[in-house]
Length: 249
Image (cartoon, rainbow, N blue to C red):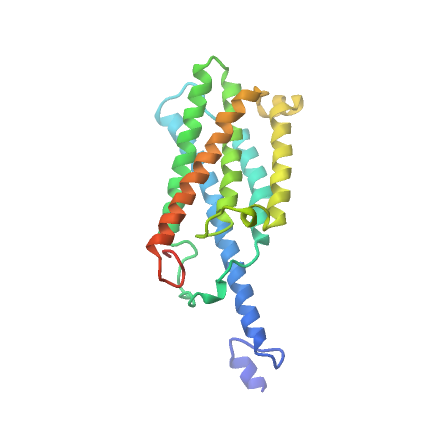
């Protein structure tokens, strides 16, 4: 028995073979959540990098975001939103999938393309929002505040799309299926309210109070991103129809 234990890759601690199924399901859930978290975090950094590079390439007199504001976005999205994905329950049909290849990368080329286009969409919309605010006579600090809130709003909308890799993130289950996501979203709204309207935050982070009407274009950045990703997921489900995964890998 001891020799078998030493040579084996899996040791069943009891005489119930259902334990193997439960262990495989838990392992697949953990792997999925790790993939979702990475898929969520990468576009945040990608969009910020594109915004900075665009500011340099276009020789913009005022940058759309400052270093401390980039740090703020990374902090609030990583601490509040990204951690919530670790508590995602198993997706429906998770045990119907065939085993993944041991050497397969966490992010397939298809999902890396998603990271790339999500970064591009967010960066482009934020740059347009920055210029829109400047064109209406607002100072750069006000325009940066709109951009920072748009970045965070995009991440919040994107969080709900990341809850399911290919299943449509619509309906009641997509909204309340993970209590940690709701708690994180609530905390984020409070924190961003402080960032925007608290005088101390205005001084430390270079933000300005936004007019109520200007929240519409800010929130629209996230809404557009949500729609684009959901359309891409729908196209992926169509292309993967008939496979065990239900979408391209």
